[in-house]
Length: 193
Image (cartoon, rainbow, N blue to C red):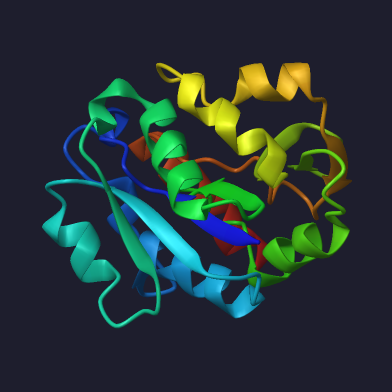
């Protein structure tokens, strides 16, 4: 199995700041999530990146991973997924957006341990709300070539319903796209400590 963090988006809703470079525990989110993915020991790790991304690349310096440049990243999530499927080269593929700060190494490992290659496997929040990561069997990766726009792999998951695995709390669904969402998440995190 291989794992890809999707980090080629433009972060437009952050109004001038890059959500993937937001500090979490003193570390840029992108690096923190890459470290969690590596600590899970799932398999080789790649990170999709826009072609021009010096700050994101700098956040990953020194980590044992593959940077996957996505020249057509402006097309949307599908461009990153197509690049990820090509990189996977026939192995099962776990994908997760890099902007999900509640995902932990244990979450990546839990999902990998539950995968049996018979169908996609999708993480949910504790309440059953579908989220990420998602693992795709290698037999489905050829279908990624037909993905377009920003819908991700929804069409594949409609045709091949995934088995579901609940992760703790909102780990599988916390996705921070705006400054307000970041402020709320940080405030909630402070009250939990």
